[in-house]
Length: 369
View 1 (spheres, rainbow, N blue to C red):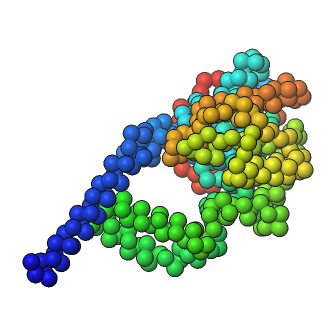
View 2: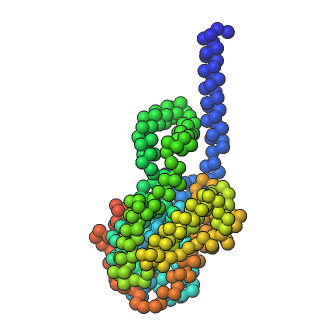
View 3: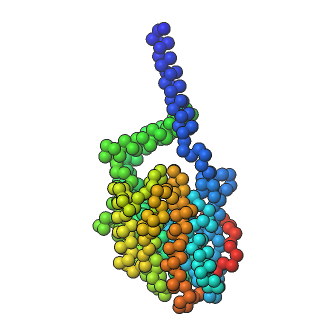
């Protein structure tokens, strides 16, 4: 066989090897067998659960134009944990806490309003509250905190990553186009992911945990913005004459493939504990009532992994039930004390449609205060 023949044979072997790797990546893709996530035609799903949004773009029932007399409203601010990624709407801790409170305190007109927004930071939540509190007329405000809510950008953001991506953008663009055209999209994604991992290993960019940890440094602009947002929420609650707002640090799994041991924490778990402690301490200093779920998590989930699935570390329905019980216990003492139904809360104008949210109808639950 001549040199040309050997070259053709080598090229064919390499091509076969690449397509074999692509096939292997498809067969071993962890998404296989999981419920659908994302848009399926005109319907949006979150890991198999249908997503329905109200006129404010929130995953909630419609807010009545007037607040009924005697109603007790809890306004829960949060990000995707509160929004309920990977669980049904009725499985979220807000919906469950409402049911528990109505069972414990019948006739009180209790409604727990889920104002969670995907990707929201505490800064975003403060802005949303300022725009909507006059229309919603809550009787209590709750901030449901996730460890990455101190960061207004993606949790892996760093100046080093931003520079790396700017320089690598032409290469990644070529890689994506070429791999799609060659019918090797999974291989292209694996190469791109491996490039990021290599950059982390050689110290060109920090890991996401190292990047996020910077936002907890007291001198950082991210931390200062987080603290200002908490003060803004507290001041808005005070101006409305409400009891102290609640800051609920939603302890979650550190790992998606094995149990998280908060009783005997490893280095990664200790970092999460530090974040929860620092955020809770700042909220308490500002004047929030604080809820810490760490001990509850450790007692309930020893040897368990309460996540949506191995690919998505959002809390499972079982973990939402734990959040609901503790939140309901914290809210119950104030309900029935003092004045309820602080106003008609007529929806309209700027506060009725914050942030340019998408508007799709949702069926309201019966008996909605």
